[in-house]
Amino acid sequence: MKITLRLYATLNVYLPPESSNNETKLELPEAATVSEALGVLAVPMSLPHIIFVNGCHVLRPDLSTHQLQDGDILGVFPAIGGG
Figure 1 (cartoon, rainbow, N blue to C red):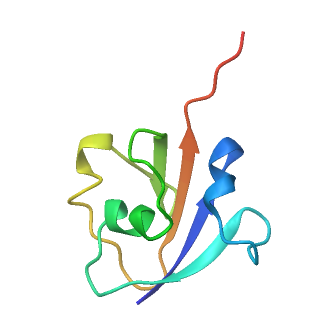
Figure 2 (cartoon, helix red, strand yellow; figure 1 turned 30 degrees about the vertical axis):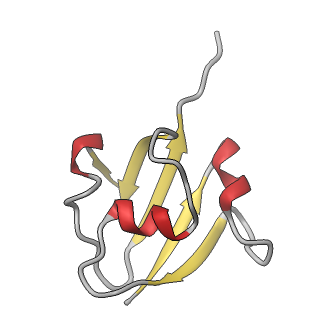
């Protein structure tokens, strides 16, 4: 299956060089999880803070069980400080 992975802010350093607009296409096995998708690009699991699949929030404990489907858009944000 194919998904679109969007990595924002400091996470975009994990995108392949040919990526554009903070996103890349990934080819994954059927029923791959969010964790498995992030593992393809070696994103450390301690860095993602806010995760969306098709605009719906995925809770952090569900990253290793939430299965992706063909055509999904996975968006990942790190913790962002400021103030």
